[in-house]
Length: 102
Image 1 (cartoon, rainbow, N blue to C red):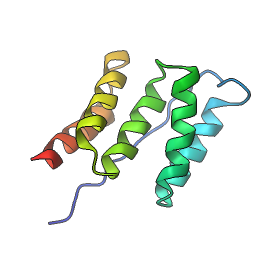
Image 2 (image 1 turned 90 degrees about the vertical axis):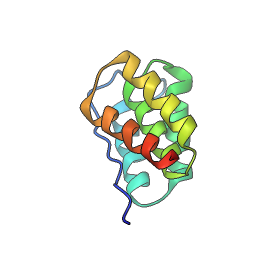
Image 3 (image 1 turned 120 degrees about the vertical axis):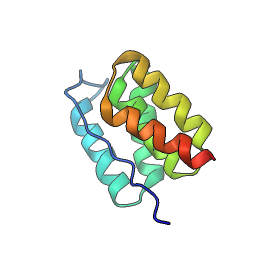
Image 4 (image 1 turned 45 degrees about the horizontal axis):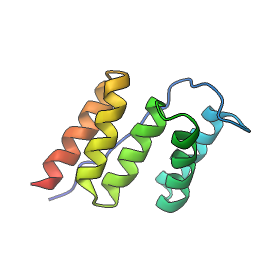
């Protein structure tokens, strides 16, 4: 059975210290799409470290974590993102992570 692909979209965000958050997130998503999970994760973690309530970075980190098979942690990260902003894609990704735990 093929696994459902987890997707992510980026909304406009305030700049991260020392750079542009939107550009950093686009780079992280590009790394994710290329299978470079460590590089994508490092960028998302950097954003969350400077902006702990950053919806897109938390969601992206949740997606990366789910792709690593760490579904409980992924659900936590996506839930933190969803507490900040209800989002259909994030809800779907969290549901996918929950289904993969079973």
